[in-house]
Every structure is written in C-alpha cells, then in structure tokens.
Amino acid sequence: MEVFAVASIVLLFIFGLFLLNIFTSIWAYRDAISNGNSKEYALLVLIGTLFFPVLGLIIYFFIRND
Image 1 (cartoon, rainbow, N blue to C red):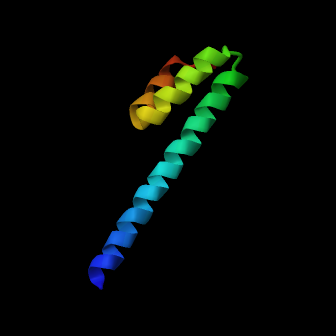
Image 2: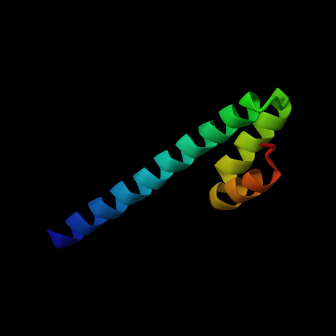
Image 3: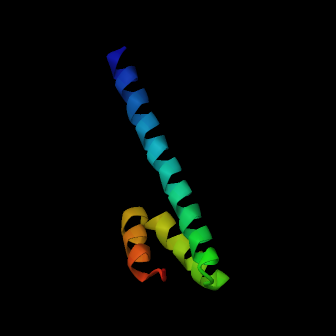
C-alpha cells in the first residue's frame, strides 16, 4: 500500500514538472513575440525550451532584448 502512495506522489511530481515545462515554454514564446522578434525566432525559442527546459530558459534570459 505504501508503494502505491509513493508512486502516486512521484507521478504527480513528474506531471507537475511537465506542466511547468509547458507553461514556461509558452511564456518564452509569447515573450519573444512581444519583444518584436520574428515568428521563426520565437518558434526556435519554444522548441529550445521544450526540449532543454532549464538550459533553454537560461540561454533565453541571456539573449533576450529588454
């Protein structure tokens, strides 16, 4: 019984991280569009943050124009 409780908590945590990845990727895409970048650049940011969540966001924060 305890194994199922631990497994469900782990799955819930993984699902939460997955949702966080989706939300941050969408935010980065919208931010790139709102900063006046091209749609191709914004799509590259979206793909980069989807496949490399932490590294992609760090790189985007350094290269984005404020």
